[in-house]
Length: 170
Ligand SMILES: [Zn+2]
Image (cartoon, rainbow, N blue to C red; front, side, top):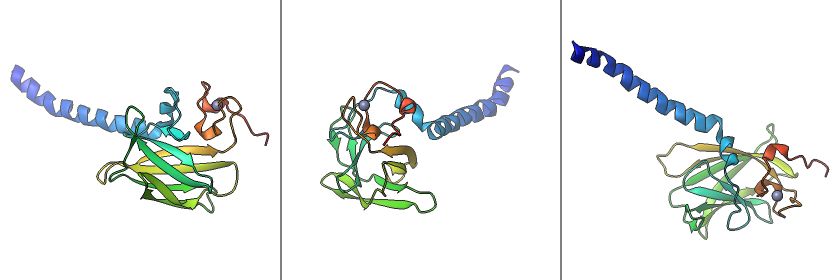
């Protein structure tokens, strides 16, 4: 009798564990910004470190406004992108700019430049391997300079939350 009870429970237990796995994935997708509560560190080039995927990566806007993505080890050292792929969409929703990245000198560089403006919404979709799930990161690329840490706002390492940031003066 006991064994039978256990066997009847088994499918329930199995489906429970499957559901909890699915839930975890959903949490990561829906609340990618939760990661921002982690300690903020500057990337090796002064860009923003994104921790929603492993390896983490640094997002940097180059002088010509193209985007540069550099993958980082746990220790923050530069690692090769290997088979990682990134695509991006940014700017006006009615006329978005699409970004395709190609490897150059160990980093991924976008073909397109950020559209005009100082606060450009950007969505990056990163696959760390060809089989990996695509992980989206939504970032407002605020290019103004933070007066405290001298980083661009999108890469600000000050201890406050992004939501408190209200630099809409200029
Ligand atoms: Zn700052």
